[in-house]
Each structure stands twice: as structure tokens, then as C-alpha cells.
Length: 153
Image (spheres, rainbow, N blue to C red):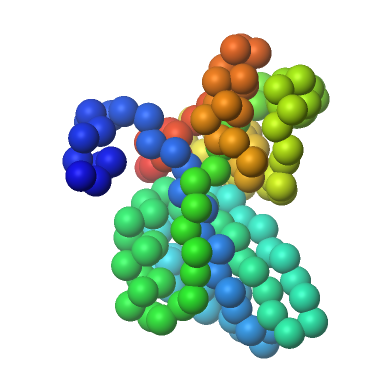
């Protein structure tokens, strides 16, 4: 049975990240951004990892189901994964997040900031080795883990 079917309405849903493999050619990023924009799917956070031949464009959107349909329809190669997102009250909270994760011995693979959120507070997207333990740890340190519902418009 799908996790979506047994999940209660309004329940916490992890933040979904798309990692699109793209050839390094002029306009490729704009093509993806334009595709999402035309369909009113808003990029809430993004990061690019560049190599000589290709790039990995990582992004979080407000409506991942719609983004997934568009990526499939337009034949973009992508991987979908769950990230932990933490709301920040100030830049000092970054140290609180990293300290909490160090104490729990959780490795951070990579991180990037949100561009915007409907509630106006900054947030940090984290790719971690253990999302469940990280979520519990961050919550115990009085920091707010946000979910997909918190970034939907």
C-alpha cells in the first residue's frame, strides 16, 4: 500500500528534491525553469553541481507531483529523493543545526538554502545519511523541521 494512501490528510510529508541530469549547454537550466514556471510550479530552493560534461540541477518545488509529471512528459532524466528541511530564525540557527547533527553523529552530504517560503522565514535543505534520526534530533534541539505542506503555496 502506498504511503500516500495511509497518510492522514495534513500529516507531515518530507520535502521532495529533484536532481536533474543535464548536459552542459547554454540554456538548459532556463529550459527547466521555464517549463516549471509556465505550469505555475514554483522553485523554492535550488543548487547546481557542475562538471565538465554535465550538471546536476537539484531543486525543491511547491508541488512535486506536478513537477514529476512535467519532467516525465518532457523526458528529463531525474532522481527524486527526500530531504530534511529546517526553518531558521537567524543565521545562528545554522550552528545549532550542525551541532545537533554532530552530536548525533549524522553526516551531512550537502545542503542549500531555500529561496523563499510562503511564511517568509528562511530554511535550509539538508541531504543526510539518516533522515528519521536527523528529524528527531533536530526537533529535540527545539528547531522546526518543515515538510512539503509547509512550502506549498
